[in-house]
Length: 532
Image 1 (cartoon, rainbow, N blue to C red):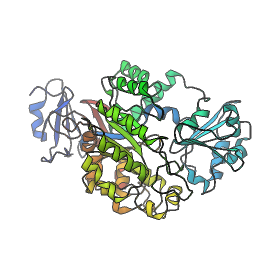
Image 2 (cartoon, rainbow, N blue to C red):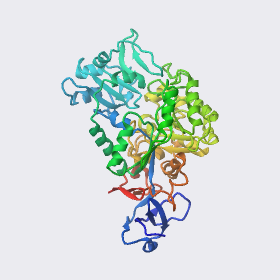
Image 3 (cartoon, rainbow, N blue to C red):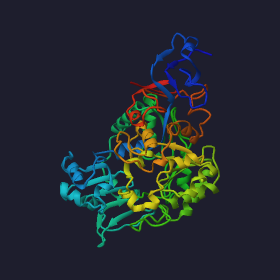
């Protein structure tokens, strides 16, 4: 073989291919060229080979986040970070301490509805904190709902209920007066369109910083579940400046009301690509969220809500899905409630299969009869472990669980059942809905509680993944989900040279300790994108 560009040595290399455990790996031209022992290195190196002995470290295939919103995320994470707010008093304190220019907007994100303690979510705390004249836009943690001030509603001309194409709504009190609680994208858009835009240079800087932080925690690739706004301009601009530190696959949104021209536009987008990014797929939503009462359940939640499809006529979703799948476009559908998941699986059973398997995302509450259909239909299950461990409590005292009731809350995030019945399970973060650090997510998948919090009771611990299953969800399973099982996801000659190097072994280390493991090196296409 020709001389290697990069050779890495470590005490442990997990190839995930079933072969013997090597201690050295060589790469050239962006692919893996050899695996062996440290003694083999002298036969692989040339005068320009970079050789690194990482000692007591562990090399794995490069980690892939299954669900991410990079461009939406840099716009959604503006203003005050409210993700640590736990009470209404804490919310008011955070808003009072915010730095807002005179006459400007007060923005925030990451607000957990559990902070309201089961009381209605209204803009009363906003008025108490900053007065009636400040326009406030606070994004709730799931990004499917927002809380806005009376001033913001007045600026948007919203003084009562509205009718939308999708399952969106302006929440109003008994007198028909808006409470400030907006549900789903169309309703949020009434106010969001008034927010000031970031300068293009600032957006490029924020996206660049995001990609660097992703590489620093071991991510080599991610699946972007949108391709809206200035996504194309941003990624072209970043590639004009150099190589991206993370690979990307984009699936543009298809929303209710999308007509023939919109579907043709999605087909046209499938031709877009760069050196380390490409558009491949289409993203649908069949329902909203359980916390907001907009999921699609077989039976209403305890508030009498979550009874409808996000699409006014579900057959329109099926028709759009069939059109795109018939043109070879892989489908991704957000489905949270049991009725929504069932309808999506029924749809996938009817539409054409594609080279890249169709997938269903989130899968928050699911009856047993649906579990086996994923393997039977060759459909990828996409799940975000920290959605479970970060927002649900084992005693069912949280908003999500109380809305569902014990029977449905007891079938939450059935990751282990899916794997045990042969499903392909890809893991991820859904950033900015939850943090993207894969070390904490891998730990949460095994612990069914937040990493580093041993005093927190595990949520349905029987659904915990093994250490290998969790790692596969970020590597070999992720590759198979993208139709790339023959070229990535494992460390074998001829596969992409995407690698992650940890200070601790993800297969043997204590999960809480692994969540704090140093990331010594991240490699994409044989090039180092992060070096500790």
